[in-house]
Length: 256
Image 1 (cartoon, one colour):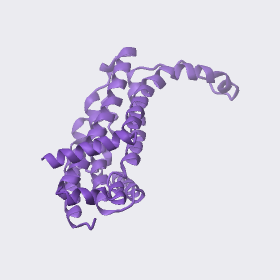
Image 2 (tube, rainbow, N blue to C red):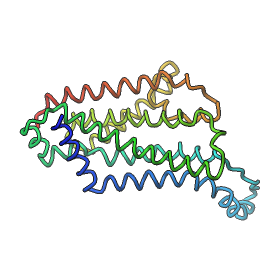
Image 3 (cartoon, rainbow, N blue to C red):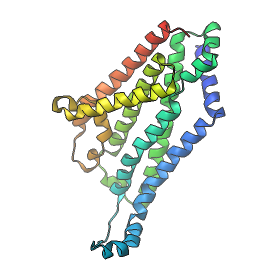
């Protein structure tokens, strides 16, 4: 276990040294502030645009905003945060391949499965930190301006997006164990997510697609019940675990 913790410590120092940790914290914090801020500024922006819209024959009525407006922004912005997280994390393995530090660690007795576990745990921790920061800031400001109580199943809906991020991390680790280039890792991860999204078009497959977790905001209004996401959440959790297992198997066979 000491070698695992030592490798994880090295990874944490690398993330901090390269500035990625700072970028991720600032990015997720910015999105967290933007969600209630955009909701709060919506009436003002519509009032500013009312004059030009009136000239086009459009009438702007009074815009009412509440906590639901803020959380709608959260579910619109969290996909952008996940994309940024994926781009920043796509070189987690490939950087080691290029620099040769992974070979050095392996020659010192670090087991290959520990490399995969350390990388996966670090990525999961970073995603949880970012997601939690964004959610907490949005929750705090929304509670200050409005009432979060009007949003049904709020924590569950947000947790669905966290789980979807875990599934994406599983894909990142899997493709990183197979490919040498971080661009290829990003493209393959994006392709797998797109495929899961397309499965939602098929009625019989929709309920099982992890991409269904991206559409969790109907829980807030009661338009959907939690049971509608049960199968997709189970598939996402199990497949993410399978991706890690496959990554360990690939890493054991890989020529470093």
